[in-house]
Image 1 (tube, one colour):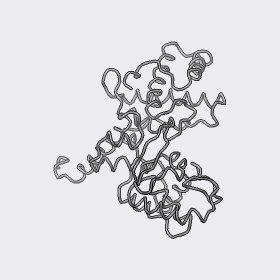
Image 2: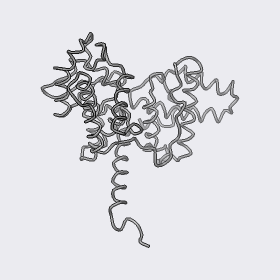
Image 3: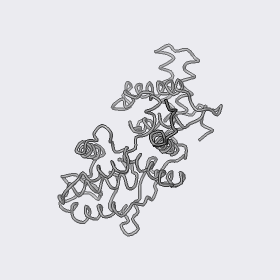
Image 4: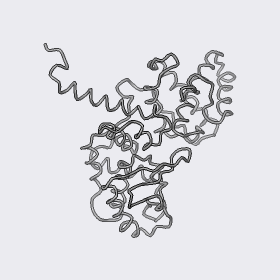
Length: 315
């Protein structure tokens, strides 16, 4: 991926980028040097999209954009230096303008980058919950009713296998190997990977698939179905995660992606090799995974600053 930095690689179908640059030149009257800067910034965006298996900007989600900004924090320029805050802000402006143009032209339904901001230094990293707060969240679904069994299994698999919400809702029954405790995941760019899951997730899945799911009279082979027996949608899964987060007082801290962030961070905290975590997450480049090593370092720094007697000068 390093060869892409600074190159004029397209951020998705070339005609979209070309039309956007023409718009900047012709309708907004930007200078040639400014348009060239936009082109370079979108080339960097293309490198990130390639890393996570996206070839068309119309498939980008708001979570992808958040990860892109965090990705910039661990990326280095051609000169070998980290990107300065001003450079990150400029790149964000270019990406935000590009997505606004896609929406203006009717190429996408909504402008997903409308609220994308260059982060403050202390807010650039992905959010990760502590193990204790994960335990609290995953204990939220209570009871043996079908929905409780489904929600418990869904939360356990999201965290236990580190899946994206779209990957989880796409799972079919044949994708689950209950004996080996493996799940076949179809990731971005239709890339497949096998991801293990633990005993707790296995027990929750068994209870859901064996007892809870049949009660909803499913009409599809999906692992997770809604009350009408159809495949649970990405939006439906997002909503139930937020419902349980609200129930335990974490509504402002949790999204489905938070569980994926926590999965990666906790593995690295536990000594997992970054390359192994890369495979589990389905990242094309280890650079993207290295975002989570920064999360771990930040947590260690916080513990050190709070606990070590000589972390700060006395008096």
